[in-house]
Each structure stands twice: as structure tokens, then as C-alpha cells.
Image (cartoon, rainbow, N blue to C red):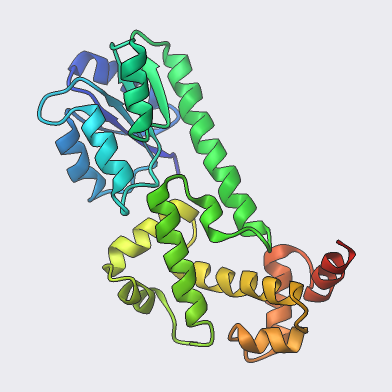
Length: 253
């Protein structure tokens, strides 16, 4: 599936021009101001936003500010386009959390490269988190709001490690979020389902416990596995090494 890019621009000609240059690589959604963009963001899954700054109803600065401070949306990368080429305008955009600030007129090729780079970097971070026994959940955060949210998620999961019934519904309830909102947020920020994240958090907690000197049998019980054999198999499947190899590698360090 193509990544989904939301374009926010009140000039129809520019909107169509950008869409034409992106549609071969991305699925493109379009709105004409920040208010319409926010409505769409709460209804559909978007991977990245490209927004003009000067718009009626709600401008790009206000849109970016709301996105980066809203826990449901704060993970979304945001590129701002503007005819304002002053240092003050650039700093304002970056201070509000914009990931990239591009001045008009701009090269379509440059815009595509910036989009590709942002999405690739985020995918690399996600992949490292998933495949590393020691990478923390908050390492995939891109904003303070995301970091706080992910730290809370991690804490709640660790508090219920031995609860075999812990699933997306219970986790969403503990976090006072709707199931749909929570699922979308976790999936967007990590490419994992909440249930996958719960299992991965168990395995990462196990890695930390083994690093602290606990043996495999102790660890498997602490993190909620009924069988050390099942725990070992899942650990190897996730991280590419059996728990004993991880312990040996940790001891060498």
C-alpha cells in the first residue's frame, strides 16, 4: 500500500500541481484549510501532512501547533510550505513542531525527497525498536507528547505483565481512550497492533530482567508466560537469538 499524504492548500492550482507530482508514489488526500484537515485527520489514517501556511479559516501554523500538541495526532510528520522566506517565519514553523519548512516557489523533486526521507527515517526507527531487545518504547517518539504517551503505555503494560487477558480493550480502558483511537494511534506510531505491542513489551522486559541477572525460568514467569519453552521460542522469533545467547552476549559486555 502507498503511504497516505494529506495536502492542505487553499490555492486549487497549487493543490492539483502538488497532487500530480506525488500521486505516482503516494495516495493523496486534499483539503483547503487547517480546519478541514483536522476533521479528516480524525476520520482517516494519514502518514504525512504537507500544508501551506497562509490559508483562511485556519492557517498552517495553527494546524501544526494543534497536531503536535494532540496526543492522537502528534506522531504525524508535518511539512510546511510558505512564501514567507524570513528567518522569523522559519523559526516560528520549527518552534511549533514542523519537521520540514520549505519556501515557495519550490522544486517538486525537493518536496518528494523530503517526504521520502521523513518516512524512511521513521520506518528505520520503528524497525530498530522492533528488532532490538533493549530499545525502549519511547525511542520511537518524535514529540514530547508522543514520548509521554508511550511512557504511560509502557508503564501500564508492565504493571499488568502477568494478566493473560490484557488486550487492546483493557489497555485502552486503562488509558482512558476509545478502542478505535488507541488502536489507530499505536498502529500509526509503531506499525504494530496493540496486542503485538503488549507481547513485544513483555519480551523487552524479559531482556532487561535477564540483563539484571534473572534466569530464564524466573523471567518467563515474571513476564506472564506459562512455559519457559514458549517464552524462549517467542524471544528467538522476535530478536533472532535464544535467551541464553542474549544472556551470554550481555555478560561479555
